[in-house]
Amino acid sequence: MATGWDLYATLQEQAEYAEYYKTQPPTACPNDGEPLKAGPSNQPSVLYCPFDGWQYPRDWDPGTHSGM
Image 1 (tube, rainbow, N blue to C red):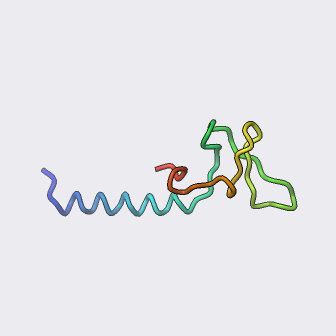
Image 2 (tube, one colour; image 1 turned 90 degrees about the vertical axis):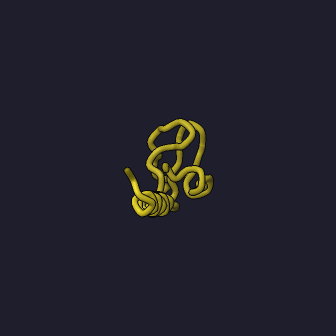
C-alpha cells in the first residue's frame, strides 16, 4: 500500500520531468508527427514541417506541445 510520501515523491518526479520536457525543442511536428527539418542557413535555429508550415519556435507552446 502506498503512503502519502510515496505519492508525493511520484508527483514531484512527474513535475520535474514535465519541466525538463518543456525545455527540449521538438523533433516532430505536433500536428502530423512528421520529422522537422532545419530552417534556411540564415536561420539555423528554426525547425519547420514541410507539410503544414508549422515552425519552431514561432508556433511552439510548451504548455501544449511539451510531450508529457
